Length: 122
Length: 122
DNA sequence: GATATATTCAACCGATTGGTTAAATATTTA
DNA sequence: TAAATATTTAACCAATCGGTTGAATATATC
Image (cartoon, rainbow over all chains, first blue to last red; front, side, top):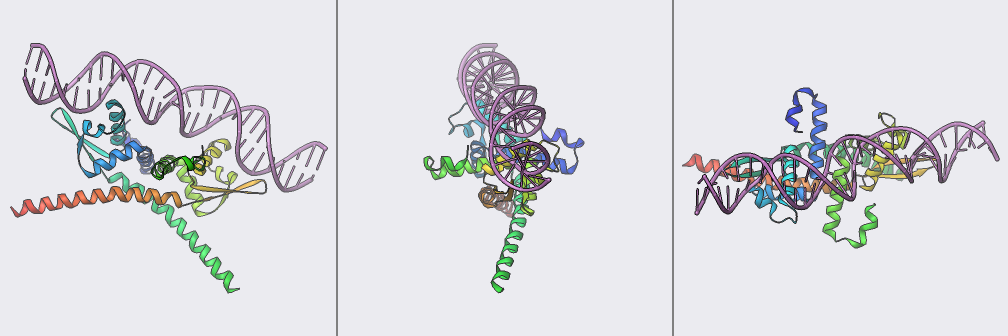
């Protein structure tokens, strides 16, 4: 199930929800986070990506599919192999999410700070 | 399975990996993201948290358990109910992760920029 | 002490996950 | 054209997921 297939039948908010679901799910696995870091550094073929992991090529291929569906990587066919590279875009959405939480968090810290100052004054 | 039970038998890196796994897994569900946003704003009892969702109280209780195991919320027993509040701490780790990816991403953009400048010069 | 309230626990369900192996598909090379 | 290489697909497996319902456990109130 690729996100682009669903595009015309979802509202914007549903789309953001779906994107965050798939991005965060893709990141919630240490093998995939490691793959993404390596692809951030430089492009790799599927075989190169799979090399360091103690699992089958098919398993790595599946991990790449999860990253690709989350739009975190792009694959381009080059001869008989695929060149994979990272796509940062979806991480901006995650960044924004974290910022939202931080805004609330800091607002509450301010409140607490204010409370302490008030208490000291009394 | 709570992270604190595993603490003595894991290395620091394994611990970070486990924490990111559980934090990102907890965030990869829109109900839990929504709960966390509301708890960021203010403390709530389990019943209050459950109110807006069209699912059983037990289901919400499970979501809260996932958030609690990821250390994203704290629960305190107050009389016969529980007061829940957000804990921002684990999100710092996520923030750092995103920053790592961004560092690579920007380094590559710089390379590309450099390449374009070079090409124009020729 | 009986009853109402707040929450969790246990058992179950169908769907999804992360892995496997073996076969299929493309493409290049000999 | 045959063989080697790169990758995906299909079928399977056990574990986990997100939900349900009904019973259990605390605590507060009548």
